[in-house]
Image (cartoon, rainbow over all chains, first blue to last red; front, top):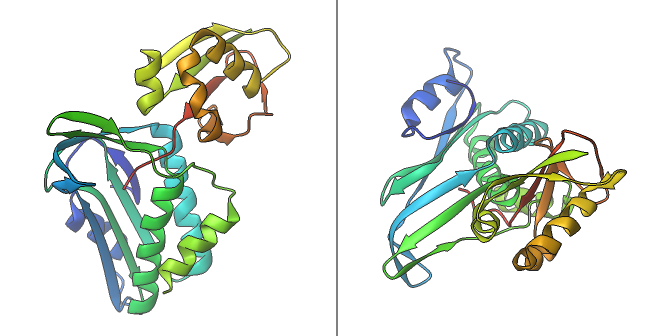
Length: 158
Length: 81
């Protein structure tokens, strides 16, 4: 298991935790974020989601985010796995694990990573709901948009 | 020269294909490839304001030069997580 993955296989938070935590004894905290497929979205009753990725660029963008997190929290290690393909309600679409000496850095790096995923990683949700389907479109991906990066950082440290 | 055009999500649906091979006259930029594409498929045009572009699986700009054999991707606003 690598620190970064884009995969059609079900995600396993525990194995990513083992991967990131390693065998050292310097960590005092592990923060884990698991994103789930939710039944309700903008008033629609969701049936399932189909995630599509531009895989090589998605992996590259995820690695970039981990580099950014290392710059802000140098002693914190982060891993992120994103699932693609068809996901049923309640399934995990993303797992982020951040391990650090202290909880503040672990929480912040974890939150920063999910905020940046939503900004710059080329992955799309195709939402199938009762009565139709829609491609969800969020942020225009621009990794060099410094204002967006700073916004993610502010949220992470709020 | 020949480029591979990659389209994703709703852009792919609108085009009816996620991968197209197109001939463009050099010297060309990403913009050249996009203009040729929307001349062929006007329905894609609305994405010009909101999309991102990539060349050979790395984020790029409309003004970037495109070479023979490159893969040029047009990406709607992202919605991962």
